[in-house]
Length: 246
Image 1 (cartoon, one colour):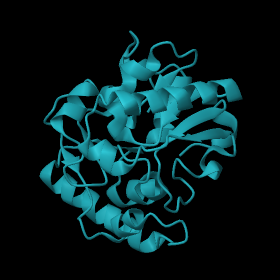
Image 2: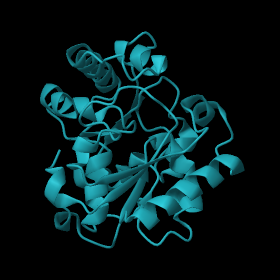
Image 3: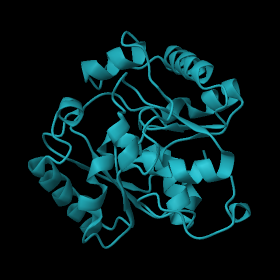
Image 4: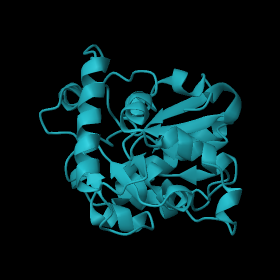
C-alpha cells in the first residue's frame, strides 16, 4: 500500500452502520488515509441488509445520497463506500455527484486484468460476491472468487459488532492467507488478486508476501482513480497497456 499521506486528496467514506473494531489498513480507520479522510455513517445500512436486501433498495439509496452530500459539503474530493458489495449503487450515487465517486473496489478488476492478465477476487463471506456483482462491475460473472470459512476468527469478531472486541491480527492474517491459497488452488493461473471487502486490506501486505502475487484493495483503487488510470465506474481510458503502471 502506498503512503496515504501524500497521494490522495481528502477522501469521504460512506460507512455501513456497524461498530466492530477497525485496525490500521481498514477503510474505517483514519490512519489508513494518514488522517485525510471524512466519515459519514449511513443509518440502518447494516451488513445483513446489504447482503439480503434489494440491491436497488430506494430507502437505502436515499440514505447513501444524504451521506454523500454531507461529505461533499464537508470538503471530500473523492468518495467511496465501506462495502464492495454496493457495486449496484454506482450509477445511482454517481449521478449528480460533483466529485469522483466509486462504490466498490470491484470496479478495478478491468484495470488489473489489463495490467496482469487473469484476476481472482477475495471477499469476506462465502457467497456474498455473486455473478450479479461481477456483472455490475463490468467483468465476467464466472471470475474465480474466494472467501473465509464461516467459522473464521475474523468473521466471528465482525459479527459480534463490538468495538471493544479486538481482532487477533496474526490469527486473522493466517486465515486470510489460507483462504487465498485455497482460491489459487482452484485458479492456479491467477496473476493478481483483488480484495472486494474493505476489512481485508489490513492483511494485504502479508497476502502479497505469502502468495508472491500483486494484491489490490480499496486504497489502490482510489489511487488509480486519482491518477487517471481508470474512471470511477471501472471504465478504462484509451491507452496502451504500457502506459498504465502496475
